[in-house]
Amino acid sequence: MLLKDLEKAHPGVESARAIRVEGTGTSVAEAEAPVQSAATLAEVDEVTRRRTKITKNSPMRLRMEALIQEHQNRIVFALEQIDGKKFKRDAWNRPQGGGGISCVLQDGNVFEKAGVNTSIVYGELNRPAIEKMRADHKSFVGADVDKLNFFAAGISLVLHPVNPMAPTVHLNYRYFETSDPRDPVNATGQARQNWWFGGGTDLTPSYLFEEDAKHFHKTIKAACDKHDKDYYPKFKKWCDLYFRIPHRDEGRGIGGIFFDDLDAQSAPAVKNPQEELFQFCVSGLESFLPSYLPIIKRRKDMPFTPEQKQWQQLRRGRYVEFNLVHDRGTSFGLRTPGARVESILMSLPLTARWEYMHPISGTGVQPITDEDELDATNQKEREIMEVLKKPREWA
Image 1: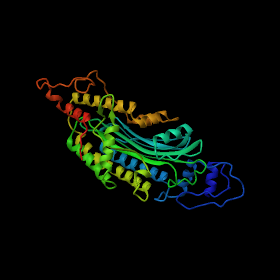
Image 2: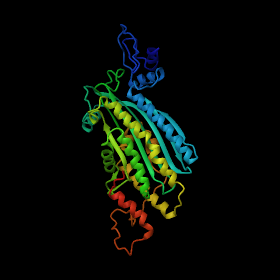
Image 3: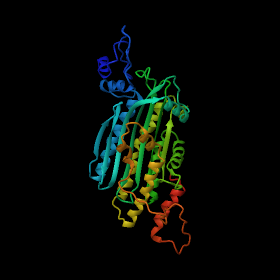
Image 4: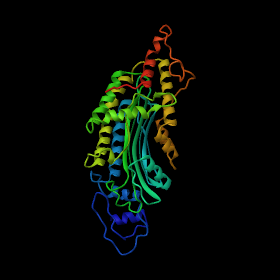
């Protein structure tokens, strides 16, 4: 039955050799006729999805796909309970293999714009792309081929609340893997191939509430500490550096954690580093709702003035600047052939504002030092700017 499924998906697959479905041990006996062409990785995974249940013995590709889809549903459900409005669910497919679900809420009661997206991508890296990967990733296994099949899966979330007292939050967890196109069927993620995890989450308030910052960071730290006590300080510093806006010399927000390219070399003392790093991503996703829901519940109904709303719009302008100018994920996505632009730009707020030489946040504006000239009503705005200029430790 498995072979017939593959033949329907890919006519070039004939009953020529054993084809093993990963994680099941199922095989088809070899026949005498030669193989005309191999099944693609996307086709193999599609058959595995239909014919088997995803377990801890399944390929990491399918386990990561199941994980991000589960948490997308959990998060969307929790946010709908808070906002009172439903997300629009938009499922899409890629001709090359894979697809995704974009869940977006706009003009809500609590969230001006909220997006929780998942994507599954199958594709090919040509030789120049392979060489660039080798330059960027020390552990990248070179192959004597002109192309490599790749798989990428990720969940990306950005929430922009209506109330300027409530912070914007971002989350992303992802997995990347390549396999030799000469033998995609037997690519399990355990052999000599390329794979890595990346991700993190960070908070971007317009107004600083120290209890919120401490709660967010302590919750994330607890998730990190389950796996390695060095993870939180290492990834917190990485987050502060990555989400820096160089041309403004300030942070996008008050940080969280950020990591990329975590592979076998990242956990050399662990017997199964891929499993350990996958479980770290599980812990990170599990910690999101406990880290953010108490904050949004405290701030969503606070009173605010038109001037405070304007300040929020200025801070959102900085969010847009970082995402369009410096964010590697946005840049990579927009350069990818056949990219789904609407999903990539889901992270941008509905509204933002830029003012020329704003007295508090304008770049190059001399800070006011005379106490007589300081406006007490701008104290909270100056406070967040100080933290954005010089990151603090919260946990």
